[in-house]
Amino acid sequence: MNITAKTGRNDPCPCGSGKKYKHCCLTTADTINPDELLWQRVRRAIDGLTGDLFNCADTWYGPDALYEAWDEFVLWDETPFEPESPYIGLFMPWYLFEWMPDPIETTVPEAAQDGIALGLAYLRRKGKYLDPLRARYVEQCCAAAFSFHDVAAVQPGRGFVLRDIFTGEETEVAERSGSQSAKVGDILYAKVVRTDGLAIVDGCSPIAFPPIEKAEILDLRAGMLESHPVLTPEILKDWDGELRDLYLDIADRLLNPQLPALQNTDGDALLFHKLHFEIPSPRAAFDALKHLCITMNEDELLADAVFDSAGALCKIEFPWQKAGNKRNPGWDNTVLGNIAIDGDKLTLEVNSENRAEAARALVEGLLHGQARYQTTVIESAQAMLERASQEDDSPLDQDSEDLNAHPEVQAQLQQMLRDYYREWPHQAVPALNGLSPLEAMQTQDGPEMVEALLLQIERYGQQQQQPLDPAILAELRAKLGLEQRPLI
Image (cartoon, rainbow, N blue to C red; front, side, top):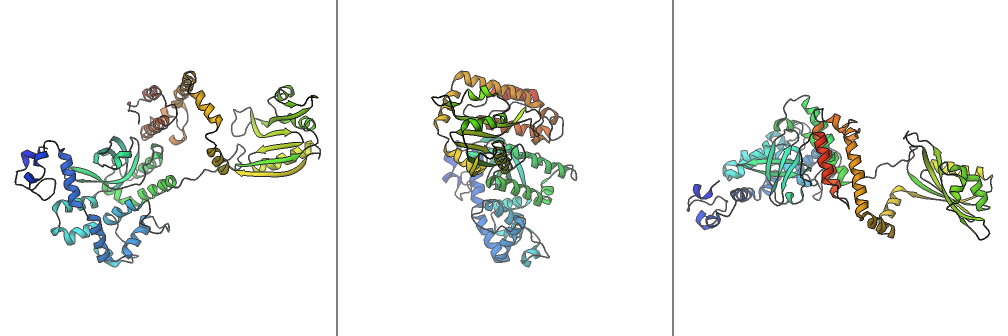
């Protein structure tokens, strides 16, 4: 767009400042991007719009409208309205441009009588007094629908390209602050509003979903397509509750992460027990318990033991094992616990309550009552993880980092990753409903989910101390028949 060819010196400046063009942007027209002028004009036209709409809502419908709308927005899950809620940035445009009360159950009959969204009521009552651009913007806010969008490209500080996962429409969006942190592959729940050739986001999720979260979104899309061959903004509005329910479910899980229920290979809840016994002698205890280690013979076990000057056993440590594993048929054995003998003390560590009970009975039985039980120290998995995180800077960790810094080690690690990802396209993947990536590429939604998984792999690979070799990803994409993408 050539500003100087379309705007006279004495015409109002297209930036919307209200000044004449010659007193405003004329001198800088050759250096200002026309899109920037349009952005400034739209921002000036809608400045103060949210406050004006809220005042109208309060005057026309009263304060109860806000709380009734909030209850519906959170799908009546009894979450109280709080201005500090992370969802407030989404709720406000939804309330202003989407919400219409139930005509029977509403506590604000005035809003029900209007029978239209607040934004449309605002245009009906005040439209002739508004800046035409402001009016067009409100009209488009009411017409646009919330949806899930892939971030397809990013220009930090300027905007990004969003691809609607449901309609397939791709839009270049002007967004300064949000584009600073957005990454290709992010998923945004947002409403994209188009006005006078400019697309901006009016309401966006407080966090970007990582690519791995796409599976549930594609499942919802598949369900919608069973009833609607083509998805449009009007259909998305009809499914607004289902879309928002999915968004709130994923967002709550990401904003409030919970440690998954951890289990050992027996299916028992993970709870670490350290049982302490008093024993008559190290040798007697070892002789009674040595057969519990099935992967080493007596000589191998004693090779790392500590003896006194007379040759008597003082200290030894070895695993308690059993043959096979019911959850992993390929395993030869399962480690049930760890036995440590030190003088007249015996400690047996296990990772569940059931194993702790079995361990106590086993020790007391095999030692024929000569092992005197003293106490058990119990520690949850959460507490152990917290303690481990506080010990991250231990000398052992530093030694590990130093070792990984060696070129030979790095080359070996990359080769191991290359070997793994060469097999990955053939392996069953839970996120692909048990299909392998190659099998999923033959299904309707599979290529989109495989792409999301590759973006997640790229992202994870770049966060590692030794980034994933781009050649591995290029080989993966070639094997799967996907176009090459720049690393995030």
